[in-house]
Every structure is written in structure tokens, then in C-alpha cells.
Amino acid sequence: MYKQLVAPEYGGIDMFVGTVRQWTGEIETTKIEYSAYHPMAEKQLEKIAAPIEKQGGRVVVAHRTGELGLTDIAVFVGVAAPHRAEAFKWCQYVIDTLKHEVPIWKKEYDTDKIRWGN
Image: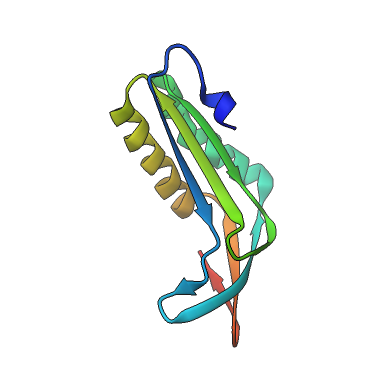
């Protein structure tokens, strides 16, 4: 995915990799299952990327679905921009907006129950 971000016009590339963590506060997670409504998720991701691409940036996003174990990669966000400050800002915007607006659902399995998260 990194190679999709490399181009002569970009001086900064910022990447975020989200993994499955073991602890959320005092709750111990054993695995996570992600599901999504793919057509709508893809449209939302395009909508999130559009203003960045309009300003000359490039966005690459991959979010896994299915069952993931501890330390597995759940999401990758990469942003290329002419300058590093834009890359940092845009990458944070993409991951924060993705978490709130893209229809991806998380079922967390912990040591004593199953919880639905957002």
C-alpha cells in the first residue's frame, strides 16, 4: 500500500496502522469480528478522501472484515501530501472520520462476554 502513496509531487507520507489490542480499560479482549456493508462503506471512504484529493493529496485505506486475533492489523490509512504537516493532519482526519461515519461494525469477544462496539 505504501507504493500507492509514492509520487514525485509528495514530500510527506503519513500512515496509521490499527491493530487488535488485548486490553480496553480493565476488559480483556480475546478477538474481534468486523463486519461492514461494503457498497456503502466504499462510498463513504470515497467521500472522506475527496476533499484531500481535491487539494492534491492521495489517500489509501484498507479495513479488514471477519475475525481478527490479538495484534492482527484491522485498519491501514495512508495519506500522501506535498508537505508533512498536511500528511499528518489529513491522516488523522481520515481515521477519525472513518471510525464515526463508515458503516463498519465491531463485535468484541472478551474473557466473559461478547460486546458490540462502534
